[in-house]
Image (cartoon, rainbow, N blue to C red; front, side, top):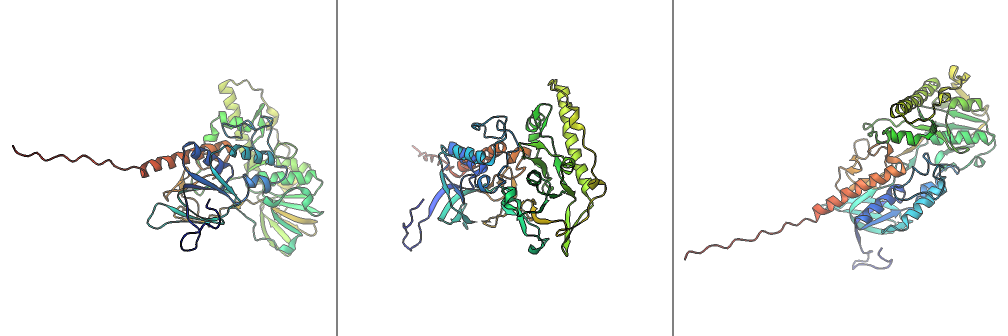
Amino acid sequence: MVPPGLMDGIGSMAMETTDTVVVGAGQAGIAASEHLSAARVPHIVLERGRIAESWRSARWHSLVMNDQAWHGRFPNRLFATDPEGFPGKQKVACYFEGYAAPIDASLRCGVTVDRVRKIEGARRFRVETSRGVIEATNVIAATGPFQRPVMPDLAPDCAVAVQIHFHACRNPAQFPEGAVLVVGGGSSGSQIADELRRAGRRVFFSVGLHGRQPCRYRERDFCWWLGVMGKWDAPAPAPGTAHVTIAFSGAEGRRTMDFRQLVSEGVTLLGRTGAYGDGVLHFASDLARNIARGDADYHAFLDDADAYATRMGEGLPPEPEARRLPPDPEALRHPILTLDLAASGIVAIVWATGYARDYAWLEVDAFDAGGSPNHKRGVTSEPGIYFLGLPWQSRRGSSFIWGGWHEARHVADQIVTQRSYLAYAPVAEPRLKKRTRP
């Protein structure tokens, strides 16, 4: 980094140059740095917060990883914890911090990337940051998919005391006394609803379309089953295919999520959240269909696992009780379609409604008409621009820690290949002497 105060002849900070700038020091950026270092590619990693900042400060306090420690890791470093356990967010952050320490790279924290644009007439990019300007041949956007929280503009601020996106949720104590409505039936919404109930809160839970899988079946974790059945390598869905969230809960360790069970424990289940007016929220009549969709996904998983165990002779004990579901509660047969927030005692709404992309800082021709990265395995239509950390970047396992490591290796290999082409200089052929007549 050019020290502050070192100026060029016209009074501006001198330009710093490198081969590759990696934006983001989460799991994707750290993996990219490791592979670039191994290939001796000069690079700089820029992180606006700390290493693995989202794991540190943008998660529910008791969040755990979705896969066990033996599985959810980089291939060449173990977690310093029980391999059968599910590391919490602080252990994950410490894991990445320890992993990054020996990597031969220039890692700069507390640096915001404001703008990246192509330098006209050159295969290079100008990276404008809060600490100065860097010129680079390649830029890897490793900021991941969780960039801009999505909160529907549905209920006005005056509707309840608190409206909050789940990325800002930490624990039940941060909410005022009263009932809480959680909107969104994925892993984050499921865990928050589950923990609020365990904390003694009355919980209303709005559930849309979702997938559902057993955390453990026939003495094996779900990640083991996906691995032996080859499902981690399922190809990425077609562009534009809607992502269906998966319901898990990390509360009290980790358990298979069944929304019927939550109802039996006191949670009020609702369909997809719709319109708002005069203090009343309206919900779709799709709850039974949404639950059935999750059940179908759950049973398909069990069917595949049973077929694999029979075919391969694994000898794992059958688990018929896993197929026994609680009876449908009244909420499925006669769904609640309207809810008066004040009369129901609801003081807070948690919007577990996901994130939107935010690549406004990346002013390059690397996006499709809908604003999504136009890429194949992270390699984009703009030479020199790459993406890492995307869900389904090339397969189902791409967004998991170990999957992102392999995606980063592919991107680094592509950069190394392009460097060899750009460094090529043809050798001049020797000129033949003219023969003279005797």
